[in-house]
Length: 255
Image: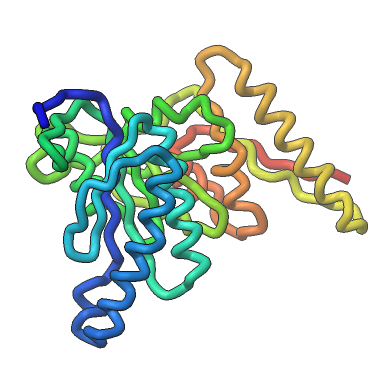
């Protein structure tokens, strides 16, 4: 096959703590690798992905669009979470790469691999290129994690976490990136009524405020999924602001 250059979203996945698992129970770990393969393949195919290769306990795949790659990653994470036997780390980067036969090469491949290496267990990390591509997709929510210098990558890379049902919020990292001055997150309003059935109403108020603020020019507004990840959690507001990378928080109650 001739060499081809094209824009692609490259996804790397890896089993968290694989070396420790292998040292503890090698036969069982090999079973997990086989199960991991069986989880990945149909999902990659269903999102028009291209199975590139397996790398030990990891998988490398490419997708025509960043949104397909992210949606596939979410489905893979949800399936892994449901199995409840191991955790994955997933990294995705979108760039022009070179396909040579059944393999793929280029700086974009290296960056995707490094992003996966930076991801915490149970988390999907993406670069700013991917984040920009999914920012207008209402079914995909992400949050800023950190700006970091990845090995063998010349420029610092901004990393974002894709949020999914049942997923963990990545721990706050030291960062050189400051939140935008005009940035805000609306935390879920607290239902102060005695009727728990009114919970949908207080959530609706929060969502409506988010939607209205999103129409304000030059204002960065954190999406619903990211903000609602802190619902019911008794955390310091400064910590929440740092994790969401915003300068302002809005909280309230409904009665």
